[in-house]
Image (cartoon, rainbow, N blue to C red; front, side):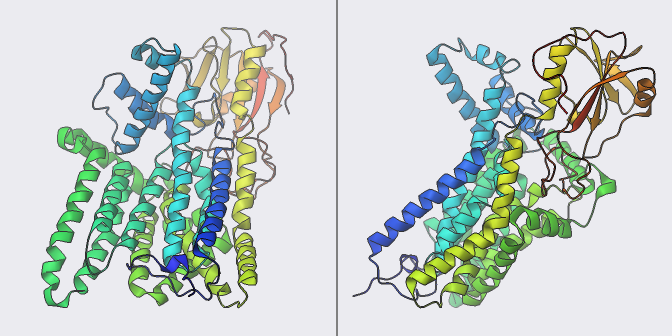
Length: 571
């Protein structure tokens, strides 16, 4: 008696796999082999997400959103129950708070922290562990989505589809990139994928644990980031399909026990992340109004393009690579032809999410991330559908592997290029270190360009920063007077400019001392996420040496130059 393909032995649900072409190997051996390969894929996925995870440090604004996320958790540690920040729900902050408390507990046992107050007080002077903890949570979520995608692939395709989908997810460049950032995005992706997996596992004729679990994951996704509420679309559609399966009592089934259980499960999970809706609604409402304005207009309205085209041609095209994106879209068609209900469920979230994300004036490439797992699954379905008619199992496996590697290659190449760049020292750190060696304490340093590109100098220096509203330089809270001892010119691939007054100052005798280059301005083919404040290309890494802007450092003739260790000219 021959054994069936493991992918076909799952309980019946919305998603069913086509019959395997052949099945001669023992079930245990095949599972062991698949498990070993999945383990290798997980190791690879973890490696590329951890490579360069300390990027930018000790500079704290290498990824500006990170400090906003951490500030909420640290505010809780200071005893403030309701921090006045509502841009994100609280679930990720609670997770981060728990991780910080675990770090404190280890430090307290080791004698590093004498009290919780001492632990919180360490943040302004030893902030790097806090950043690494935050980024590690994001990287962990980025790795955990790989087995979820594997399981989804096994349900939607035939033998090998799960492994191919896992490989695509492990090396999906856009997802790997954002797994380095201590923000909510990869956690949202994980919860969206988990919700859809359980929804596909659900029995279309009777409801049970899978339906409730899917609703819980949907609520947790919305409690992580508000756009997780879009999961209500596939949940609602599944309820309609469930009721349609029962012609004798469709209306009763539509509003019956399954609907009540799923609504209650979603609401309770969502409430974990938004307690302020009940206890601080006025401030929450005002914050949502402000957030809505920003989402609709963007930070740079003059740069706004068609959001749907931007996410297709930039966020997904470069975040996955054209072969992977094309195969992913084709896979949706294949899934729908095999089982239209499954295809409808899978496509409903992707289409609804894409429609909403594309309507925003704020167009960050990371806004397309929740679609990525489903495109990876779709691409895997396409690959195995193409190779399934090869009669010889070994040749079929080899052809599937070769096709998968060819499809994922552009994405994998971007992953390696990105990781190599972010693993190098940020140019803003190099400038801060150079000034610490060569400028005397108390020196006034003028910094031009975007505030996101500013180096963070030792407090012994007096930093001059441009006030865009009052059109002058300020030193702390007071207007800067006289001439600075040093001028640091910033050259940025992102929107930035040098004020005319700086050019006029340079003509009064300032001496050029050094140039610190992060990228080659002559390489115009590199593509940046121009509405974001991240100084590494999203696509194209030609001439990019390290994260950050380029800097040119000038000294006033009267300023004192101190000899110090290290290279004096870093060009």
